[in-house]
Length: 287
Image (cartoon, rainbow, N blue to C red; front, top):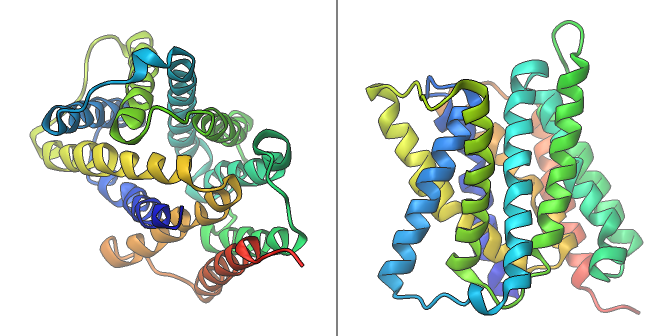
């Protein structure tokens, strides 16, 4: 299980760079989600072909249904989150979206039969406080009620995604990630088709960042992400998941020239410290 920390944390760092890459793309948010799902699924399919992987999904149809449900929830999470960015801003949407790990931790004793330790909850609270400080809980003007609802829905979709994904035990690795991404692709494609028809506003200047976002951050990153999600305890997935929000702010400061205030730096320290504390307390033998 400890080996799963490496791909999961690597995936979180890759996903945390999505904002920097997406800032270079002129397409709408839902078009970006569609292209990343399409390129990600094709990349995973190529990886399976190169690996000469023998599919096992047909032997475990019940788990395949769980993967499709998890992928549909992944699509809902991305669509709601990106639209929330437009309506209420990145800071507020980030806070609402990252209620998802809170819901996962709260539900872990019931859904995943994991013991919830008080010290682990305390560490998690410190991490969430750090996210509040890092994201900068502010908004310009009145908050759009629909935007707030979309942000909260993205958190609910996160819970559903993790819940269904962790019920899969026989379909693993790249094949696991492929079915979830393929499911997300179908959902997003239907959404885009109903919204604007079979057209995409892709330009030549968008090509390189779109390929990077789809092939590397989605095709490879999502594989690493679900390897970690499926092998780690739900509470670890929830706590460490906040490293994605932290890395997004750090990458924005490094690559986009965005400044980090003293409050954000302090919040970053809380995220790292709280995550380490929560993981240490979770793995510590019960007295």
